[in-house]
Image (tube, rainbow, N blue to C red; front, side):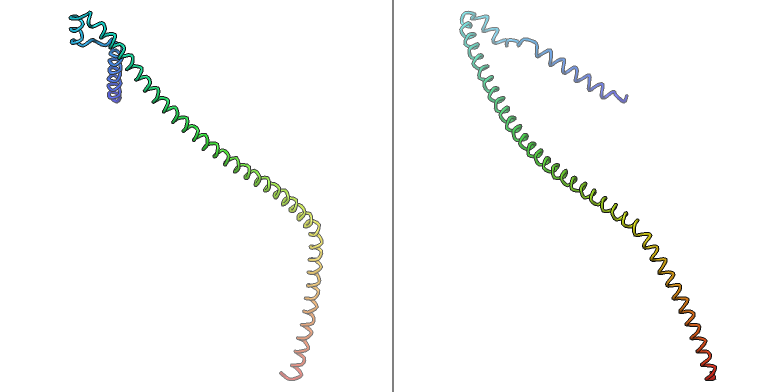
Length: 173
């Protein structure tokens, strides 16, 4: 049931194609009026048949010339369209080629910058590695000096507080 419509449409299409094919290969039938005229005057009909054949031939040649002219016009239009598209495509290819070359140059420049920066980073890391022990030694010395001065100031502060306490005691406070 699901494919019934498809099968009917396909069958109908096949039937139409067969009928058209059969009738296209059959010879054209003469009209009854032509048969009566041919039977009545066979001798008079001969020059007319030649005349019809000549007219038919000239008509066929005119039709063929008209078709050829139409085909030539179509070919000319297609050639023009093809040329226009080729020109358009070539210009697009040229633009893309320029963009690719510019992008490639930028990429090469960035790679060079990367190499320079990597060299600078290596130099900075080497300088840091050299200076780190010096800085740590300086820091340690500064901390020792700070601790010594702090201890000295604490001692001086406690002496001053002691003297202050003695002076307050002498003054009676």
